[in-house]
Amino acid sequence: MRANNLDASPCLDGAVVAEAVREHYRNQPIALFASAAASAFTAVIVAPATPSWVWVTWLLLMYAQVGVRLLMLLAYQRDQPDEEAMARWGRRSSVGQLMSGLAWGVGALVLNPTGAMEVQLFLTVMIAMLAITAGGAFATLRPAFLAFYLPCMLPLPFALFAIGGDIGHVAGLTLLIYTYFFAVFSLRVNRRLLESIRLRLAQTELAEQLAQRTAVAEAAAADKSRFLAAASHDLRQPLHALALFVDALKSCPDNATATREALVRNVEQSLGAMDSLFHALLDISKLDAGVVRPVWASFPVQALLDDVLLNFSGPAQAQGLRLIVHPSAAWVRGDRVLCGQMLGNLVSNALRYTRQGGVLVACRRERRGGREGRDGGWRIVVVDTGIGIAPDQLDEVFKEFVQIGNPERDRRQGLGLGLAIVRRIADLTRIPVHVRSLPGRGSTFGFSLPRAEPQATAAPAVTANAVGDATRRLEGQLTGRLVAVLDDEIQVREGMRALLQSWGAQVVAAPTSAALIAELNAQTRAPDLLVCDYRLQGGASGITAVHEVREEFNSPIPALLVTGDTAPDRLAEATASGLPLLHKPVPPRALRRMLAALARQGAQAHLDKA
Image 1: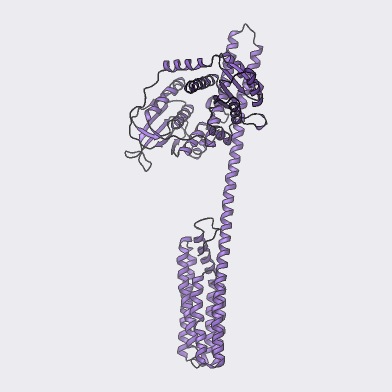
Image 2: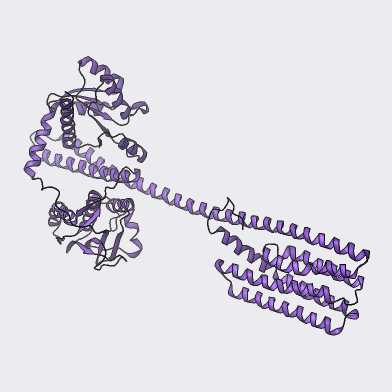
């Protein structure tokens, strides 16, 4: 069967064959009736001029093949074969058509033993009519048509040739030519019918794909609307509380120190809630944007378990829960940071929904088939004694802002984004995630990692005192530095100016790159550091602005991008620039450390160049 560029599926050819066979069997009742009726009528006409045993034997042969084909039709209708079996049923029908064609061809040769021209012309007309009927009835199945048509028609011209005379020769030659051209015509009709079946099936498949994609798009739109509604709600709550606390703080008497301190703590908690939500949304945006690139390497599972003990022992104790972390000597392959983020979100989620009992974190062997065993990779599991999850909600919990048992969206029970981030990291790294749960009994979450060979420890742990000393040395790098700030929001510029000056830096701030360059030229020296907003007024890009400032002073000025944008395409562009990137709201401590590190790198580059 000819290939066609409309084939949307490699299985379409099989579907075309199946549909052609179905159409062929739908026409079989008419073909069987025509064959039986024509046989009886022919026997009546030829009986006076043909020995009885000849026409009776032929008639019995005709009804025998009609009976066999009828039984085959009934078996087909009873079995209702699937697409894979259709080709086999097509071959069976072709054998039946061959039997019918041979019977009619034999009749053309034996039913006129006297050579009477009028009898032979009757047989010719009768058989030609059946052949024309077959051209329509069997047109969708080429082998069946040829199996009937050729043995049925080819004996007729030679029977006419045998009678002889001008009429016999001319009629035989004419019928031979007709047989050829009708066969060619029927085969062309066959190709057109198959092409129409192919087009119809392709259109049906495309319509189904469109319906599926429409359903996916509608579901995505619904998920997006739900996501935005939940995000808007969770952002408005701390903003509303923040406005109330600030107003109360303004009205608080100067001598009410305890009240002011309590209000300040509430303000900090509201800011912390907003910061947590922004960072979770940022994590999701980074994963959706494809800017996170997994770095596969071998590492000890114990490193992840140590992080769990460090980060969650305090919260578990504060909730009155037991946090049990079984030590492990296993080594695995994966992205250390992303795996740690997955495990941290799973543990945080387990603690959040556990009221009594505790949480167990462990690493278990896993078989290649997926069951826990002795000869596969490793599965890191988080087992809790929490509220559990109903079976019909196991997939729902991995969606954004879905929280089982928290319809009021109490922020103290989290944001509903932890498992959504786990799912995205799992999709990115192709790490299988497993979940089992019983309502009221608890849940088990886990993910599988391939085994790795143990390696020597890369470096000794860094002590807290060493980190603090290094931090203080870096922060000292800002004193006396000229920092250029480019941001189109005046409140942000003034806030950055006040903050940087409090760290001992000199500050030049402007809303556009042109204005910033003009002010810097008035300083008669190039800036030591450049802090630039990614999205500027008029659609300008902070990346372009960094290049403009560097070209103006012909110097690779250390630069930092700051953005509040979470659009996936913009995050990808900002990450691809190679510039360090911080996301608003930026914690002052993180900003100070980043600028200090950039200042040190700039100073080192200057020394190397000198």
